[in-house]
Length: 299
Image (cartoon, rainbow, N blue to C red; front, side, top):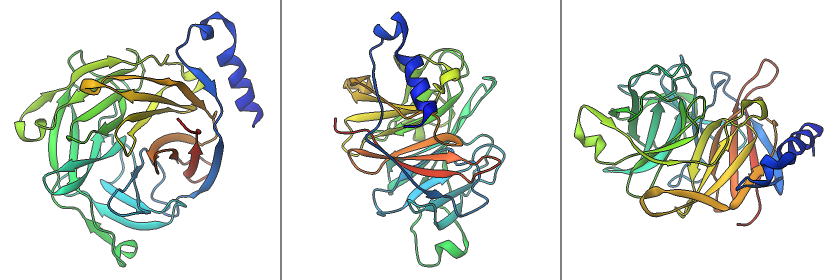
């Protein structure tokens, strides 16, 4: 275990405040570097989604100020395809999830980043998952025209970088924790056909204490393949939750899988199966963005 991980573990487990936490901190069973992104234009990977219909395909995207492209890669970072999202712009793309939709499997893009927390509304784009072919890696493709829904929050702007979708197609959004705690919002699937601006419903306040000094701001979240658990990641840990009625989240046996600051800037998370997770990172001045396998052990 790296010295930095040990020192951060000492900080997190010291003092009376830690004794009152709902979380039990433990290092992962395995942390395995898988590779770096081959495509040099993919420098700010802010999300990860393992395709459920195309085994071995990982979807990701660049964040703010970049082209409105979806990238398909393998688990080692090799390029499988790049697709322009038709009818979309990239103001501050931060997150991505898979969701059921009228055409079958869709990808939902969250143009929802808001560092100063001043955007009165944000955008979600939904497109059918592009098919990867033998030619995809060598040419820029295009998605079908994107569905769009404009979203606002009931208590004003939030900086949010994490979404996931349930089996009904409802979208859940987890705030970063920049100023108002870490909150869970729900947007019903009906919002896609409602027109105008939809207001997300506040569902929960999650028991994660925001603390950027130890990397504890939320950068992504993912629903497990069986739909029973949610992994909420920060820059240094994954917090596991059980899904209850109405999408409410409760700590799953209080498990906090603490791995420390092992990435240039850790952003994305997706489940590879019911136990293993894949993390993605933005690049740094000395490293391309990374892909890392994380095994936090059995439930």
